[in-house]
Image (cartoon, rainbow, N blue to C red; front, side):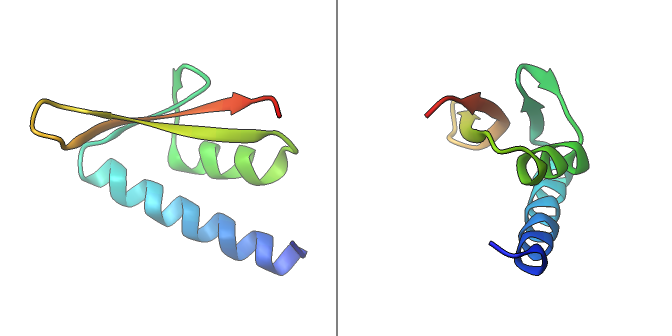
Length: 72
């Protein structure tokens, strides 16, 4: 992925995370509450891979998204 593509992907990820936050979804990165900008910056800057875990309520609505670093 070149630099322009990386910036575009980061911008889209941040926008998606901001939308989730506006809908009341809590965002976590490595076990801590995190802002959309922090998550998108780290995911694009680091060589590590992250997995998203979606936590839903009893009605199936996503209430939390946890991004955890995984080792491949």
